[in-house]
Length: 237
Figure: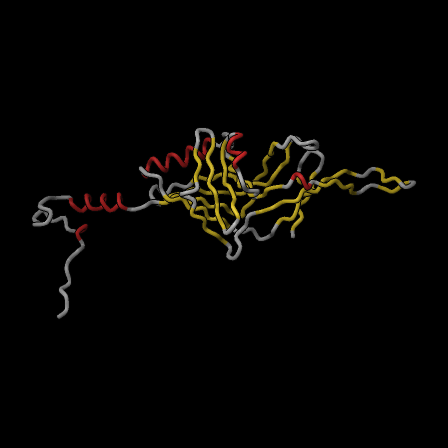
């Protein structure tokens, strides 16, 4: 004997004479109930679109600062649907492998004159392995303090950090990754942190957070820098 088909669409029964609800406007109440049950998400998309460059403090024996290209990053969520844009670095350099070389100039009596001293700096990057975009669920891997915020991206035995704000010396000591995405908002990271906090407060819970990482078309091998730390040339694999 077939089972009867029951009318279970409770959220659309707002008839004033309904024996179930016995009142008006119940559709709105059920919609609010459904919304409370929904688990919302914040989406952070790191794009492959280069937009600017930023100086990074290094203070080693050669450079005080190194200029790195920045890429567009977008934040939105599935409740407010508001979109905000930031810049983020995508390359991490290996200062301990910095090398010096001389380019150009003329050879005269065994001497190379008028040459320019340049530096090659190896770069490591964290890119999607297979497709053009890789998704990382980072809700459980968040560190949020008053002056900084970080998310950790996990993949197999690798980790990368998306960081914003002034990192404490304690946090730096505990970092176990060579891969960094550093958020640039020109307000010492506080705009980005405030943006995340606003969305969490509006959603009224700590939502799930997904980082969508878009693959760049070329893999960088190293930077060629001048004596001021400015990128003169990018060398690709």
